[in-house]
Image (cartoon, rainbow, N blue to C red; front, side, top):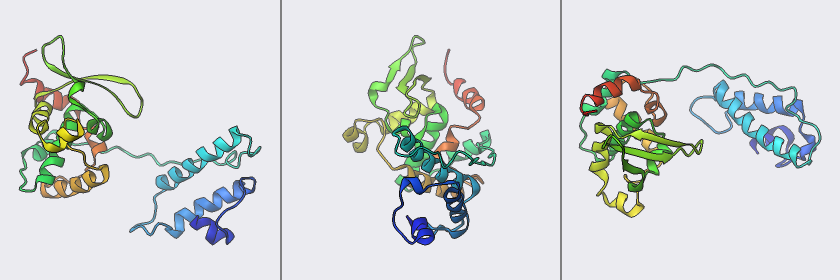
Length: 230
């Protein structure tokens, strides 16, 4: 809407008015004008993500035959390759070892460690209930759940360090009232607290729950499975 106001002096345009030039103008606007008043301008991949979202709506309009020409037909998105961050074994150990007086920091740290040892995304962790925990044929605890993003069933061994977190929070009033294994907290707040935790633990990484899924799992398994008698 900000783009339409600046570029076209209006709050709306017809779908039929969208063309290649309007798409590239929007891209340029996102790159230079900082319309959302961010502390730093948008990076290339963020700009491409905004354009991808617009493209999804345009594709819907084409399917419904509201427009006949695709304004994105000649537009080629250009994403920069990004190396995903991950924690080393020693960095993960730093986070596990640090203690906080603050309940909120302690809880978010525990959630992060749980995610590291299960590989579950934030949303999947938040939705886990006691019914998702079963005893497998190895007579150990397992998580049976569906990934929210892909709707695929996953079976994950509940390693000792992850099981500790389940036991710690299963009687928490927030867990009981929500019917989950842990109290609810928003992803945004949790990630904000993770930045504070990383600073206090002297971990020089941009810590987010997404990073937890890219911990070197072989190292996590090696250190945890020593505690289990398979």
